Image 1 (tube, one colour):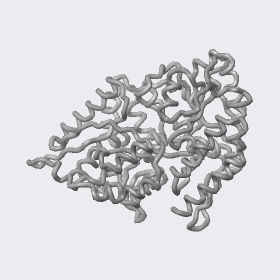
Image 2: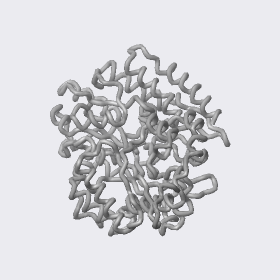
Image 3: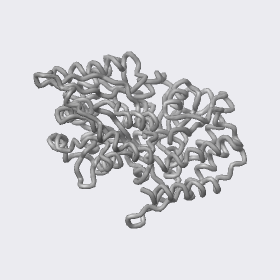
Image 4: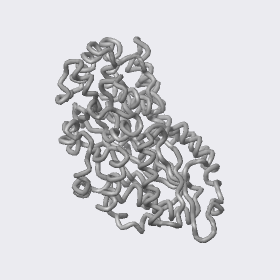
Length: 455
């Protein structure tokens, strides 16, 4: 959900928005005379001046290659409420990003432009990792959304707080019991939250699902063409009871129980959280948006325990507004190819991206799961080796094991509704000492089943 960052999108809400967006526009009128076309492209909100400069440099390079395409940067960060509002209002940029979880739903409801003909012309159109590109395919197999990043969830930790608490930052926890123990020690020795979780905008359900997966649980189960809700599985109960114990027995989770993705990143970068779970590639955001001190950062894999334990994985798709004209769709795919893809598959693109990022003090070389295959990713890392400036030595506990961990896709149907049903469950456990985990999950399971039946 990192799209990342990855968070909320209410499917039910989207259903009512289809007509509005489908009736969107006559954006041919955006094109000026002389064969020129203009597009707006998404850039994360809250970027540092250096990150903005890096982005603008990319636009300048693109325009040298495609002088007839005018590109305007527009701030956009995917969150459920803001995305739904922008979709309804027809105010999304021409090129925007969204999490894997929502790709197929938006395609089915024709709420994104069909760019499959343009994508099919790309030289690497048939080389995507099949598990990754599936999130952007229509039922007939056409690639209508382009996967630009993939991730597996990971444990991020603050090395400075580890040291202050008397813990070895080079030996982060390898079991959930060790996470609990370390969180307790951090809270006692430093006064900061030893461990924190997100709870708002569907992120509470996202992280609970992550923890449940890591303990062998699954939130839905396929039964032929039907989906059965299983959010009251043993893994989810174990994960939620662990959080409950850390909150009420250990008092190791601080006092803020209203984090969303942006909020928890900000608090972590500010040294207020010892450990938290989110996508493995979040270091880029922590630098470009939250100015984390690199020396304080640590990354390791999630502990897996129990039969069928796995790492919840997802990613980010690039999409084009349903309002875009044919000329804008063609221009938009050129931008997607230039800005997101060339740095993954060509030496020229990879080096250009690294040089721009380094010149503007943005991290280079943050570990990520391959959009294509591991061999292509290793080749990319070789091209930019001399530019890598992220503290990889502080991420070896992740990079040495992450690619061997079983990656499990997010629940395939009504994912965000499922996460939304679990947000209040997590919030209740963190704010009500007498919350009954079994009852809360049982009730949520009924709600999720209703959503699945409706879907």
